[in-house]
Amino acid sequence: MNYDLTAEQLMIRNMMRDFADGEVAPEADERDRNKEFPLEIMKKLGKLGMMGLPFEEEYGGAGADTISFAIAVEELSRVCASTGITYSAHISLGGAPLSLFGTKEQKREFLVPICEGTSLGAFGLTEPGAGSDAGGTITKGTRTENGWSITGSKCFITNASYAKFVALTAKTEMTGSSKEITAFIVPTDASGFEVISNYHKMGLHSSNTTELVLDHVEIAEDAVLGKIGEGFKQFLVTLDGGRIGIGAMAVGIAQGAYELALKYAKERMQFGRSLSKFQVIQHKLADMAMEIELARTYVYKAAWLKDQNRKYTTEASICKLYASEMAMRVCSQAVQIHGGWGYMHDYKVERMFRDCKLAEIGEGTSEIQRNIISREIGC
Amino acid sequence: MNILVCLKQTFDTEERITIENGVVVEDGAVFVINPYDEYAVEEGIKLKEEHGGEVTILTVGPERVEASMRKALAMGADKGVWINTEDFDGDLDEHSIAKIIKATIEEQELEFDIILAGAMAVDDGSAQVGPRLAELLNIPHISTITKITVDGGNVVVEKDVEGDMEVIESKLPLLVTAQQGLNEPRYPSLQGIMKAKKKPLEEVEIDDLDIEEEEIEAKTKVLEIYLPPKKDAGKILQGELADQVTELVQLLKSEAKVI
Image 1 (spheres, each protein chain N blue to C red):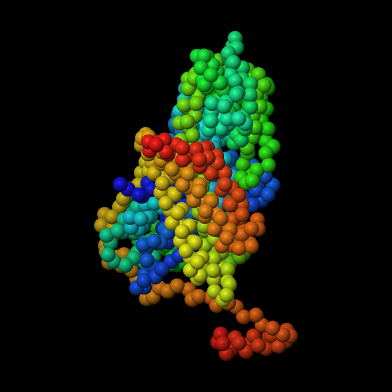
Image 2 (image 1 turned 90 degrees about the horizontal axis):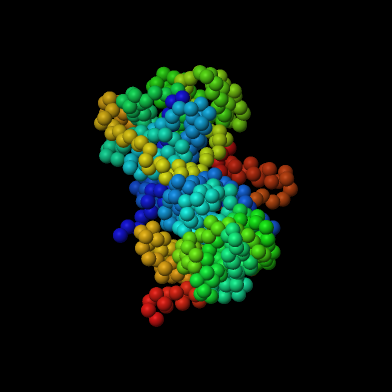
């Protein structure tokens, strides 16, 4: 057993912390107010080789491990959760299915621009009537003479406005089963494909969340990602990895909110002493520090299992569930410690509080995580 | 172009520093590349990118310095020579370090066109090792530079002189020390980080060097180390300007005792 990060992981953490403080934090409030996508930051991450972090070197990736991925997401989210989720979705939802299930040709064509950062990664699973219940999928892939025709719509899709192509699921019914789902790689500039970015969200204002509308979009035979009929199974595997990203994002947001609350508690004077001298505030901060530490350790455990090529479905669910609910508690207390100022935008914790809620919902709600865990423990 | 960069690891002065029994407590302290040396590393890599060649990092220190050397390698330096002082018992001061570096350059047969160092280290702030090394090697040096242009064997340097600027021409080989403003050190790229472990890092013991122990004996002794005194809140004088001036002069005499 060894709890130390490796030299590379430490260096990645230090580098990403410097990068987050120097390049991501300064405009984070402004981007949140203006709903401005962090495109320049993504370009800079591309130049640093971060956009292909875990992928094969022959396609431009860096071959780094999942713990390093979690560290990167955490450090970005500590100062700007919108940047954190943009990066996390790019890697774990955009790039990962291509890397896991793509053919060599598909990887050359689609994974290389992901690693370069010239196309952001996006993944289309959720539909207005189908989230974790993928059986409700309506988007349909029909055989044509030269390939496939896709019609339907997807909702809440991260990054698609900045993606040149999206991997998405559609019902195919080739084997006669109504449950048969297949994944396709669809170029976003294909005729009949519309990407709409029009949501008014609670938080994560500078991340890109879109609707995809596909009206008889014609794609080639070789646009199938993985195997016909295995789309759902593939995306379950993808989501396991994505949950480590959301867990890391939650830890990052909580860490950022906790640091601000600790700083404020030391500075703010009331009744002749700083807030941090009141035991009631001390205990809040102690609980925050403890919970963050536990969540981070568990995120690393899930990531480590994945890196060992071991089964990690339960652990990914536990890390995502615990970290996201922990982060909500921490952000709520961080606002509370700030009092009236905490409710104001300038003190940042209100942004973190809003951003954080997504972690309990995206990539499987807390309720779905509990379903997964109870299934895995044999209920 | 052969470029040597002297790199010292220091504790991060922005993190909490604790002193016990007259020494900085290392346990829990955060160690970083001395910020001025980071400018030197960046400039070395930039010179290599412009003129070709190789950047070698030279560091004297205990085992923990490897992390800082690897960071410089991740940024783009090519190799490192580490003079391990983990088991060295004596005191080392600026004079000792300069002699050790000179002996290492000779022992390792390191060729150089230019040597870069930080203007000073943020821990002891002595600003001596660079100039001392240049003297020992019998080459010219220019300290606190904010810009350098190399053209063939000619060098033009802008030097910070207490807020003013001097332009100096010189020739290679040369030693320069980096002042803030010289450049903005890059973030190491992920590929750089992944490659850093595989880059050569030569370890040298002081015993391996052609140098007598008496020669590197410290010539100075640190008598005391203490944290800066806590700053009390300032005093804002009230009333008419003339009265304030009188009061200020009075306070400078009686309270601050500086006039």
